[in-house]
Structure formats: structure tokens, C-alpha cells
Length: 369
Image (tube, rainbow, N blue to C red; front, side, top):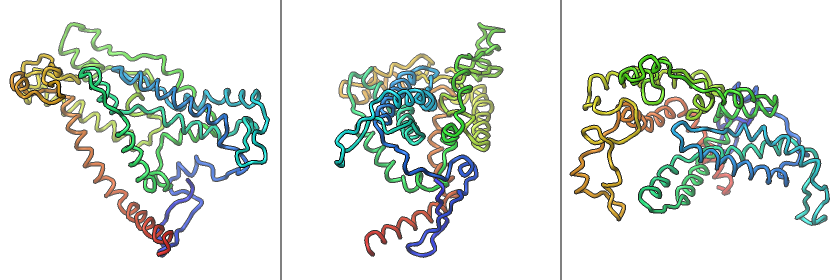
């Protein structure tokens, strides 16, 4: 993490520095190492696999809620500490296959930080839910067809391997939320925001004033409206979609806040109350699909038994309509694909070019060219 690619002196040389250019990383990540400390141990495999499986199941299970409940890998990072120390005391210290290359022991000594880090990596791998699971679940639930996730998983792993040299190994490619976990290894502190705030709910007090008013509901509802006056102090509400704001740098939080304000309180109200594309026929905030007259769209009726679009039924029911906010965010979501590429080229183009040159020369050196 402390090694940073600082340019190419010639075809095969690379300048290595002990100090990372990213100050947050340099101040958080230790530069020392104890090579005698065991890492790949029996305890690590048991606790790591268990943390990965449990978090994967729990987060995917609760991801189907309208307001997802997210259990972060920090929870596993804290929970495995007493279990690891307990296993270090009770597991036998006998050495198996002694004198062979398969020699191992179930208890190499005290539970240490390297084991803890690897267990947390396992937990991180299982903590995130897969967005494509919604598609697979919908196909199986509504269309009674089974699709395997294996091709998508293979493609995902392939892309991860292709971009490892660019997005993982360089010291500049840091992820702010990971620094919280690195700091936790050093300080063992992150219990309060993760555990205590989870029990607190959120309020849309504006809707209490006129509970039967459609306009008040559109303005004040935090679930199906603009959320004016609504405030959330439930930690799962705050961090379920974009992660913990405590782990994000100021520029990222500011960008999200400004973008949210423009979309939610400028573009959406103007589009809705000026009735652009008959926007008032549909809810202002909803992820449902609607017909031209505003009733719910029966999406199952336009799919035939071969899982293809039934054009005759579709022509009879008419086109699919979206709510104002949903259509706005969907369109901007497609725009972010191009915006991401432009952002990378403008702000990290030189770093990307230097990294490509280094990989080219390093590949030539390894092949003896």
C-alpha cells in the first residue's frame, strides 16, 4: 500500500517510495510488517468462511426490503475478535504431518492482526449484495424460469482480474471506507455509529399535519414523496445505499448532496408540476410501472411462454410509463456511465497512461524481450 508508482525512468525501472501520496492512506496504513506472524491459519479459514457466508445471506435476504438493512463487514470485524481469542485458548496445539510439506497446526499461537485482516477480507467479499440478483429472482418468481448466476459471476471475476493492476495495486487507488476498517485494526473503535444508531427510526412529521392531503404527502413523505421536513436518524436509513457517510471524504459527500438537491428539489418538482409528459398522471416518487391512465402495469401479461415480448398484448395495453423521479434517476444513471469515463480521463488520465506504460515494459522484461 505504501509503494507508489511515480513514473518510469526507463523501460524496466520504477521508483518506489515509502510515503504514499495520499495523506489519508499514509497516516492510516502502517508501513511495518512482522513476517513471523502466521496469517493463513485454521482459525482464519473457519471464521473467514463463516463471516463471508453469514453476511452474504443476511445482506442479500434484507436487500429485498423497501428500505434495505445493511450489516457491514465492520460487524464481523468486531465479532470475530473474542471468537478468535477463544479459539486460540481451546484449540489443540498438536502439529499434524510433522516434518512434511503438509505440516500444520490448528493453533499456531495467539490470535493476531494478520488473521483478523484476512477474516475481514472474507467478510467484505460477502457483505455486498449483487444487484443482478433482483433480475434472477424476478425471472424465477414471476416467469417461472431458472437462470444461473454462474456466467455473470465468471465475467465479474474476469473483470476484477483485468483491472487489478490499475484499481487495486497502485497506492493512489484508495477507497475511503476501507480506511475505517484499517483504522479499526489500530484503534478498535467504530461501535457507536454501527450498533447504537441502528435502533433509532426516522420521521416524516409534515405528513402528520394533514395525513389525507395528497399534496402534503407528495411534499413531506420520506418514502413516496420529496421528503421535505423528513429526517432520518436510523443508521440503516442513512447508510443502506451509499455506505457510511463517516467514511466518505468531504468532496464525495458534497457531490452527492448537491446532485441529490438538484434532482430531488429542482428537476423533479419542475418536471412534475409543469406536467411534462403528463407527469401528474403518475406518482411523483415511485419505482412502479404504469399504463397511460395511471393504473399499475401488468408486466406479466406482455411476456409470452417463450419469455419474449407479446407484441399484440403490448400494443393493446400501451407503452410503459414511469414516475417522474424514477424516470429522472434512470436517465441520469445511464448518463453516469459516460460521465465516469470522462472523469477518469480528465482527472486520472496521466496516471492511467503511466501505469499502462509500466505494465507494457514490465511484461516485455518478464518475457525476455
